Image 1 (spheres, helix red, strand yellow):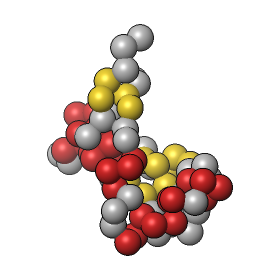
Image 2: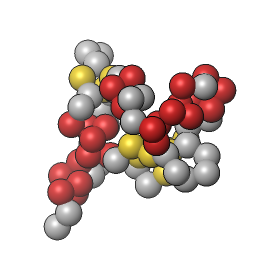
Image 3: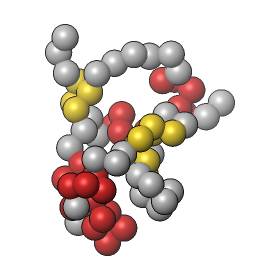
Image 4: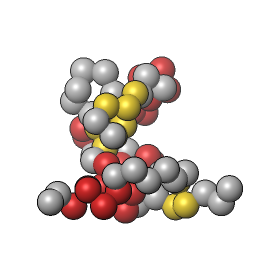
Length: 69
């Protein structure tokens, strides 16, 4: 079974600071607010138009901080 299967069916709210990934050249387009706001969810992860930028779901979970309800 894939590692991600342990997250299946969970509904949680977490905060992910995308600034930590802005240093890499692949993430430079995210510095433009209009492009950054064009994010959408696909296959359980954050993806930006063009399919060249996404954040792996396991990293979204691993590097996020839970938000208290």
